[in-house]
Length: 324
Ligand code: NDP
Figure 1 (cartoon, rainbow, N blue to C red):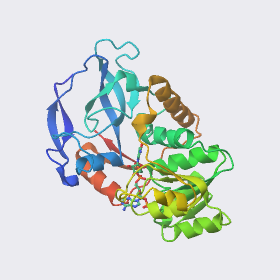
Figure 2 (cartoon, rainbow, N blue to C red; figure 1 turned 120 degrees about the horizontal axis):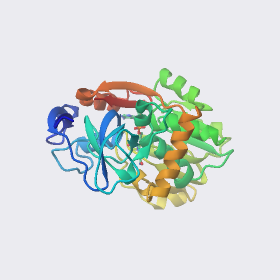
Figure 3 (tube, helix red, strand yellow; figure 1 turned 135 degrees about the horizontal axis):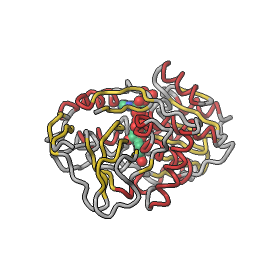
Figure 4 (cartoon, rainbow, N blue to C red; figure 1 turned 60 degrees about the vertical axis):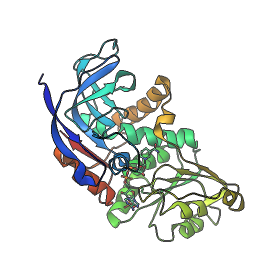
């Protein structure tokens, strides 16, 4: 194996242009770790927040928590994986690279029938969709859900999983192309953002929805609250349009004894059993053809900055991946 490889490194926070490709030493697998030859890397919104300084990370910084590939070396104490195994993770570090370290306890075995690019596209957004609908708020058959950015990475997966649950799914999207994708994923009603809360009231005979899944944040938060039924739940899981400003809790009383929560994936992967439950549900559904991961864009590793720019400018649909 070579001792040098390529990785994306940002020396300081900034725009997409701070993501530069560099020659770096191949990392070494420490105790309990796997060294993985990366086949495909999942790009996620959180990496844009880390890159621009919204979330604090140490610089120089190599982004990337999600990837799939082939085990190249196992560190001391690792028994459940061997060189040559196909693995994926949503909790790796420095995955924007040809070689990355996966903690073995957070590595997910990839079913042999699943191509590695699909395995890289599923873990983070798939397990997010899984915890949002099973654990943050348990959606029951027949309930009505409003889901923003219905043609996005989380959006397309969560829509399919909610339809499998026999929920009614209302989505928002910004373009005709995205509307079509959201409908193909199973959305019952697809709205534009302008006036969506009023449209939701009309679609629900004035009642509002049981739960809103809002990863858009700043631009949709008020409308999301206004779309809920009495005692409904707003799950704010991201801020693609910006973070939601401070909020007066007293408003929840007047608006209908509402619930608001702001979850994050790490708190829903608390132990190996929870991780195995979510990842097996997602991978098995994909392997059985019940869940489709749409790869909307592929960029070479060196163009990680262009991938971030595309994600942030709303041009993308489904999953964005990097290929080393
Ligand atoms: P998406 O593929 O959904 O991309 C974001 C989408 O948000 C865009 O395509 C766009 O769809 C919509 N959007 C609305 N307003 C804006 C705006 N001003 N700028 C950019 N996009 C906008 O991304 P992901 O599926 O990767 O993530 C979706 C959200 O979920 C993100 O906020 C992310 O941070 C969050 N997330 C949270 C997790 C958690 O555990 N809390 C885990 C994973 C993701 P359209 O054009 O149709 O409006």
